Image 1 (cartoon, one colour):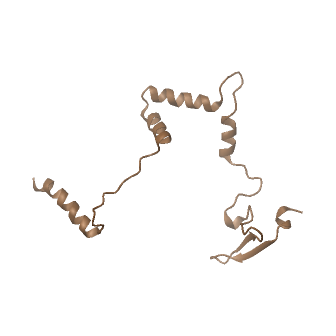
Image 2 (spheres, one colour):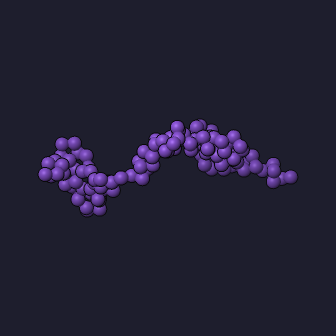
Image 3 (cartoon, one colour):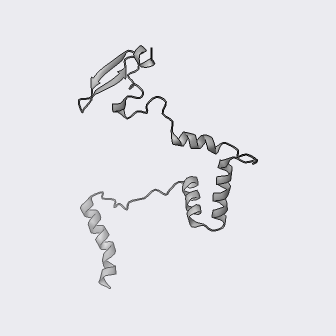
Length: 125
């Protein structure tokens, strides 16, 4: 008997009218339910496979694939490759958070007038 059959399940309609299946004890959605976008049992993630392979050491080598990739990216950055530098910077420090200029008033109309006043001297020249 499968796990799904052993669990007491509760069925309820969702907003679309479809039946949503939940475990009666935990209230959690039943794993692999197609309507919930869950992964079917036995699903293998490409990301998981790549992560496993990155930890492997190629035949005749002393470093893992991951170590080779890191060395290559760092080497490119040291050589001045801008894309490699930006990628390293983004992963190490994170991308900078965009900020929005605001005026103390918090009113959009006043902020617009304030911004026009700041820009006006440039247009008067």
